[in-house]
Length: 365
Ligand SMILES: *[C@@H]1O[C@H](CO)[C@@H](O)[C@H](O)[C@H]1NC(C)=O
Ligand SMILES: [Zn+2]
Image 1 (cartoon, rainbow, N blue to C red):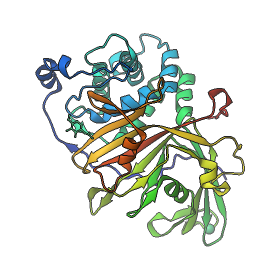
Image 2 (cartoon, rainbow, N blue to C red):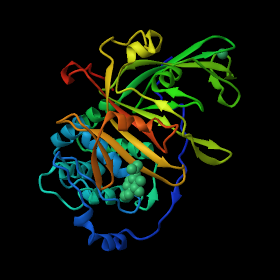
Image 3 (spheres, rainbow, N blue to C red):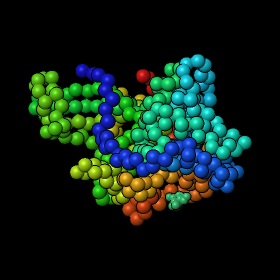
Image 4 (cartoon, protein in one colour):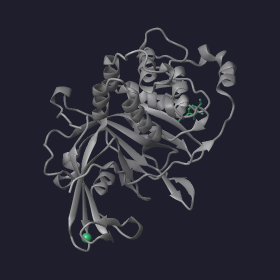
């Protein structure tokens, strides 16, 4: 039996906290006089983004989207048909404009101002500390809902889409249910000791026992039974987003795990995961990936700050973006976000397939 189900094994809500209720416009008026001094623009084209209230989370996502030129190219191809509602509320349209303004030769004081307001109108509030992974998935979701060109919207989704086959074997009657679903990022559960990206990924694809509260309904047995569940890869995306889940709910509180998680600059999924992680329907092709952006979280679960390391398309250099401040960085600097000794820890990793675009397998809905 096959059915489509959007399944996420690990969803731990990040503790949200209302820090400031100061009205955005009041805040804008206060800081506008400081704009020119704080606004930074490096000759390489990496542009700093002013922090309005608590916008560091969206700022880092914009830096990452900006470094994802495949996305910018798709949005550039999009010619929205007018009159389909209030454009100030349209997330993909405002994202398209913000990314264009970030690339522009004429520095604009706040290329992301309208985008932040647009998110606010879509209930991603300005004065609230957000979880970068949640906002990332929401923005991808808004693109599906709010783009009038559904074909292009699908192409954007396919950029990130990981198709997986889920197998569920009932431990009592041994019958197997199998279905296909997809993920837009790979949520990795980390242990409290040492971890590597490769070992976290391997455990994601290992069989997992579902017992007690996690029991699933078995049609053969006619009841909820314990079972074994496993995932197998059906297709890999051009942009592989990995979510290093450092937040954990413990007795009603959200805690952050600062433990060490190493990750490589380049890696080969086929070699690291082995054949067992792939479905027999997987069309074997090149599974090599290269890191191009890291979203970093500093601080605790309740009071944090986001920054990003992104790799520039032109000169292939790493840059560090901390709101309006942008500086050149090295792979060694990126590695300080492994965690363990430092407070700044990698939270989301963006890998790009090293294959040429035209060689990419076509994913279907
Ligand atoms: C980001 O910049 C702020 C000052 O604007 C500084 O306090 C903070 O330590 C910086 N964060 C990182 C991770 O460098
Ligand atoms: Zn059964």
